[in-house]
Image (cartoon, rainbow, N blue to C red):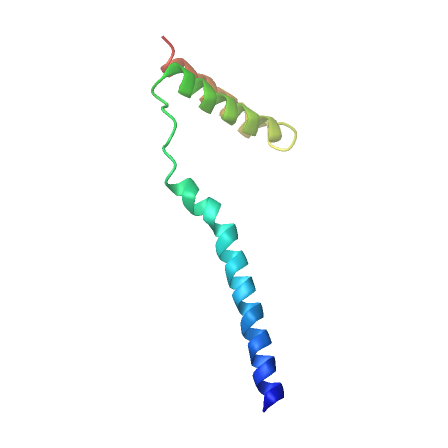
Length: 84
């Protein structure tokens, strides 16, 4: 009986550690959901978003050049839409 009790306490402790680690790793993702969106209506916000899209497009240049071209065009269109 002592062995069984000791074993179940070890298993429960291990489960608690894994559950705590899983919750701790999920917290940044949860906080990201409540982060305010950048203001895309301003020229600076549109430029930041366009830069991110261009960065994504550069990763597709070798494998999917037509998709990369579409992304570059969309970034330029988005940026010019909010230009002063």
